[in-house]
Amino acid sequence: MTVDWGNVFAGRVAGMGASEIRELLKLLERPEIISFAGGIPDPDFFPTAAIARAYEKIFQSNGGAGGALQYTISEGFTPLREWICAYMGRRGIQAGLDEVLVTSGSQQALEFVGKLLIGPGEKILVTRPTYLGALQAFSPYEPQYLSVPGDAEGPDLAAVEAALEQKPKFFYLVPDFQNPNGTTISLARREALLDLCAKHGVPIVEDAAYTELRYEGEAIPSIAALDAARNGGKITNVLFCGSFSKTMVPALRVGWINGPAEVINRLVLMKQAGDLHTSTINQIVLHDVVSQSFDSHIRRLRAGYKERRDAMLTALAEFAPAGVTWTKPEGGMFVWIELPEGTDGVDLLARAIKDANVAFVPGSAFHADRSGKNTLRLSFSNNNPERIREGIRRLCGLLQTVAA
Image 1 (tube, helix red, strand yellow):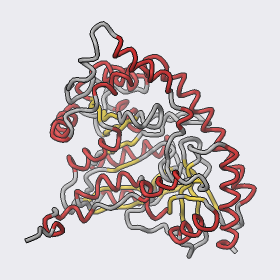
Image 2: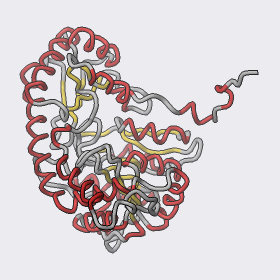
Image 3: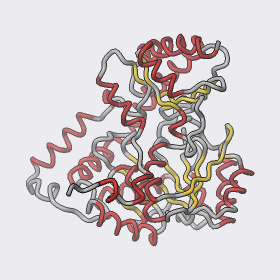
């Protein structure tokens, strides 16, 4: 008898689906396609020389590379956690070593949060739209999503309060240059959201993947920092998820969670059961690089990505037809497009690839209820300004037929 694997899978597998973005990344292998799909950093900006020197230093050290190639503690390489604690301290948060866990990218942090906090049928609160990777991380734990709309200042407070009355397990937010729409939650709205969540006893999960990529305007304190300011400098009601993927390199797969020690202790147990620890040598290399050049590297990224953002916004202003609107992000990697009602982004993508050699991500992928069919996400991070302009010209030529 042959095993019917479909009947063997756990029920939660039904909540797992392929990432539209992961599938679209395959298009990057086709040189004729100008892809605005993947929100990925440009390898031209990677600190390649510094990383090579860090690896060389390990293998040429007097002590040899044994320690770097060995198992390490699940919490993470201690000097790297100390650096993270200092980093959080500069941002208004007193973080101790027992309050930081190094993860295999912030995506693992989100998956761990889902495993820790979500039971089948329990509610979680997200924005509409929200990060697709978070939906993928949470969905296998079979939650019921409560999606709230927002405006230029952030989530709608009346909608948030109504949702909080349904007792969600947590509120997931990307406050700075949100993936996918590039918006930033204002300081006043952050304070109000903290008030509401504290009132209802609901924690906030803050995804800070893009916070350092600010190109204009004043930096706004993180929600975690605002929470800490209310609680003697310590995070109390927030879990802060950080990442080096967008600021350094994604391939090292290093992120972290900062939160109350009682939460981190539980997450460490998940780390032990999941992959034991994040790659030892990668943590050592990353610590070497960020210790020497984090701030200067961030300045370089900001200058390079600002030029690309400006190129996309300029091209949209020049080529986009009437009836098409877009966000104007102060940072991050994304511009969000809204098309006339009745337009289907999935159908448009098929036409864009076939007729214009341009790719993007349909906006419905970022909605827990699969709404937002007339929206799409464009990433400006992985193309030079000239290629961005040409891609927008092609896409807008196609949009002329849609918006007519």
